[in-house]
Length: 288
Length: 71
Image 1 (tube, each protein chain N blue to C red):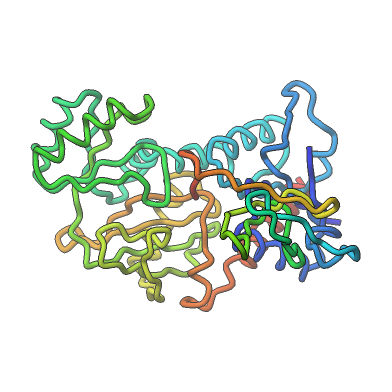
Image 2 (tube, rainbow over the protein chains, first blue to last red):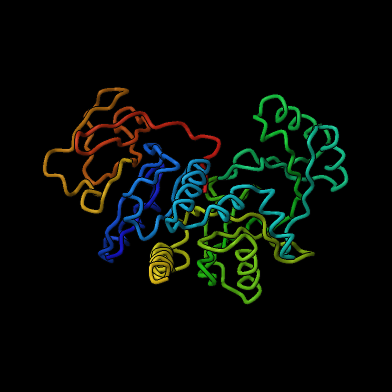
């Protein structure tokens, strides 16, 4: 009998949809609250070995990654892997993985102090985007239109931010057509994609963007497959920008994707496909 | 570790009334249909609350979004 665990920080719509899908399929499962865990690293709790797979849905990226690393160390099948999750949680590592695989991505500079960052920004030319290397939901993104803004935001980052904010990730601004593309890749398949449209330059649904179906073209499918492979593969959401000159560019990749706003416009049952992938790989692992 | 298993993942399985009070305004809260760790809003004061337990119905003020939260 297959037994699954879902690691959570909070039960969102996505987790409820996964629970519904598991219940419909008569798969036994446990919901594990990451906040309650005490892990004795050299002595695995035997209860973990009862699971054929652990699906990480932690909203806390640091907790999720830590638990994945420990469970992998104990030999428990996890989705996504710690390596893939670590790469996707970190925009610098994601960009490097994309560059390594020759996947087109916006030009990005890295700097460690404010005057050098200003020099980098002016090399790229205004506007540029400053992003924290870790973070999600479009938080703390800044479009920098001139030197005054650059100096102000960099000073705020260095004065008010934690040490992670002292690494300045400077991305070329892509003048996208009021939308970006989010594509969902499960294993080797790009299963669906949405447009995220907003009057605001930040087009995250967490920031109010509306969603509509994005047709899967051969170009998009090919690009997303390569991007997913570049970070190690698994259950991934690929954010893609449309650039008038360079075409499709991969912006970011999410390893603990939210999908509540993507099921209706695409007509694709994303939670079912996620579980099919996890169960298939868990069973294949058990046979090895 | 604290787990919620398949048989009690939903509050529909509890036969006792799933009622508790808002920690902010003391309004009576109905937890029927909710899950542990799910977020709800107090119908009286609109406080954001997290369901902590269904066996002993309990909620607490939901934590603020932390810097590492996301997808």
